[in-house]
Length: 243
Image (tube, rainbow, N blue to C red; front, side, top):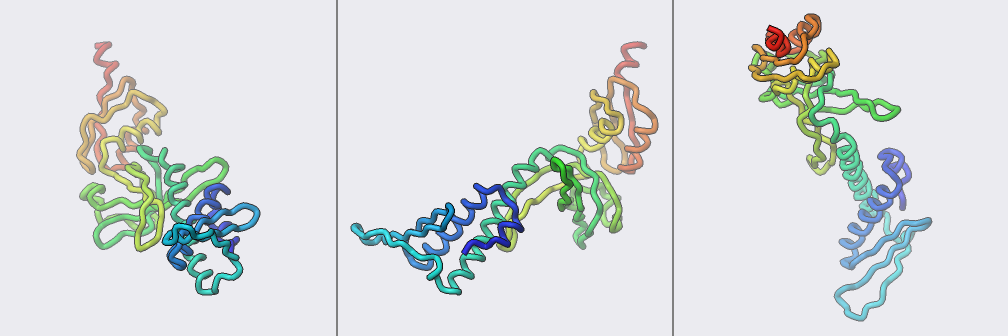
């Protein structure tokens, strides 16, 4: 009854996996038997059905091994969907800190509508996760739309991390942007390890105006300009004070 292969595939924390299995079995059997089915997964699987239509009905103990093969197949499908849903929620909560960060990714697909699918590599404790992000065409500079090639590496701002359901399947959806004012600002911070850098104005793909409290290395400015294919205009506040 308990699909060990699914547990291994989704690799959830034990308490979340157990709750997902209890929920899936209870939901499936309640619909099949038209009764309220309570499930508890401990060392063994305990299944109890209660007929709520009868006020004085006694709880019925159900032997899981007596469930039909068709019923077991339905239960397995529901367990797989529930585990998939819990994994998406678990990963979404875990990856929520990516929002507002700049990540470089490899272009994997360019849709006819201009949307770009990107493979992102993210450090997760002692392992590296490969995630999929999507950048809609409207969040790409006009001159970049339709111009990416497969395998190209580009920097993107993570704008959101959501758990979504699509065609009955659950997954983590990572939304990306290359038009945000924050992108050149964060890239310069990454490249120089300096704070006090602020983007005042940007026309994506043309230019951006940067305000900083310290002089920025010319090679860092050039590198960010090359990445974004736009002119980086830097104004240093310190120089004004010293003038």
